[in-house]
Image 1 (cartoon, rainbow, N blue to C red):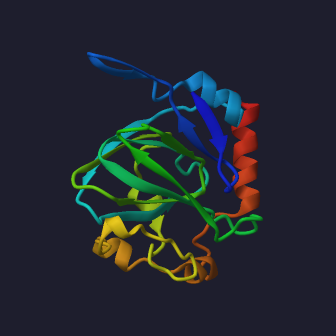
Image 2 (cartoon, rainbow, N blue to C red):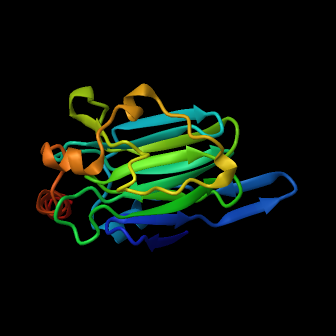
Length: 202
């Protein structure tokens, strides 16, 4: 597989090598050793999630308190989504910026998103099915969101997604500036300290 760092530090696009024949296709969509070589520590996986979304559904921007927050390894097993990583770490050189990866059942890419980063995707097809490997169990009291339509963040949704469909939770989430002012966001220093602790404890 090929692993490429995105423009947001601590996030990566993973492109697997696919082996196809008249029976179908085989691929490795997750390799703990290859990822460890890249990020400096092994993932301690704690939970696996799957979501199925109608075309146009937007899920996110979601993040969790750090530590321990929640690193994510995400792929699409059916259909297609455009997956976004948003740097919400106050003090980061790329704070407020984002990058994206097309996840679909053709190239079968994945995206790795480190703890403390924001995550969002928009479904480009009907019944887009996304699977996530995560490093911490869901904890409602430590989970937060930023409105994905916040013009300050400026996510660009492809035309094929149609009208964005959001949950009330995401619609009611604060914008980036409001979240920062309220102390809701992680800091660059706290994120780097946590990554260092993971790297030193491997």
